[in-house]
Amino acid sequence: MKAFLSLKSTIRTLLIAVMALATASCGFHLRGNYMLPDDIAKLSLTSFDRFGPLTRQVESQFKLHGIESVPPSPTVPNLHLISESTGERTLSLYQNSRAAEYELTYNVSYRIVVPEKGSQTYTTKVNRTFLDNPLTALAKSVERDMIEDEMRQQASRQIMRQLARLTADFNKLEEEKLEAMMEDGTETNTSVTTEAIEDTQAGNTLFADDENPSNKAE
Image (cartoon, rainbow, N blue to C red; front, side):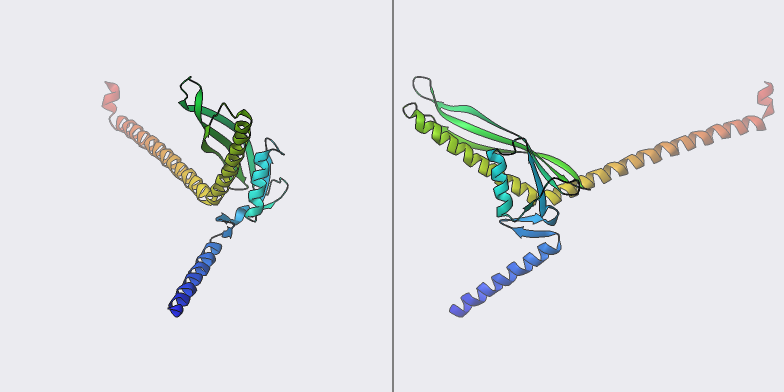
C-alpha cells in the first residue's frame, strides 16, 4: 500500500513538472496562484490615487505573484487604475421601513497597456451584503469599513486573474484586426473588378458604333 501511494505521488509530481515545462515554453510562468505571461514579468503601476488602499492592495498582489514593479516607461507594460466606486441598494426593510440589509457593490475600472500589442480597458465588480443594525452604530461603521477593504482585496485578485488571461485577449484582438483587414481587402478588390467590367462594356459599345457607320448616319 505504501509503495502504491509513493508511486502515485511520484506520477503526480512528474505530471506537474511536465505541465510547468510546457507552460513555460509557451511564454507563461507560474507566479503565485496564476500562470502569468512573461510579457508582464515587469510591470509599471499607475493610479488615480497613488497612495490609496486599492493601489496598496494591487502592489501586494504584485509581490505575492513575483511581478517586479518598475517605473513607467514606453517599453514596459503598464497597469493603470482608472477609478473606483462604491454603491448600495436596499435588500430588506425593518417594520418601521428603515433599511435592514444592503447589497454593496464595488467597481474598479483599469487599463492594461502592452507595448507593440495594444491596450485593453476592463471593469471588475464585487458584491457583498451588509446588515444595518441601528442599535450598534459604531460597530456598524467599523464592519462596513472592513467589508469594503475585503472587497478591494477581492477586486485586486480579480485584476491578477485578468492579467493571466491577457495573452488570450490580445491574440483575439489581433485576429479581429486581421479579419477586418481581410474584409476591407475583399471589398476593394470587388469595386475594382466592377469598374473594369463597366469600362470593358463601354469600350465594346464604342467599337460597335465605329464598325457600323450606318448607325451614325441615321
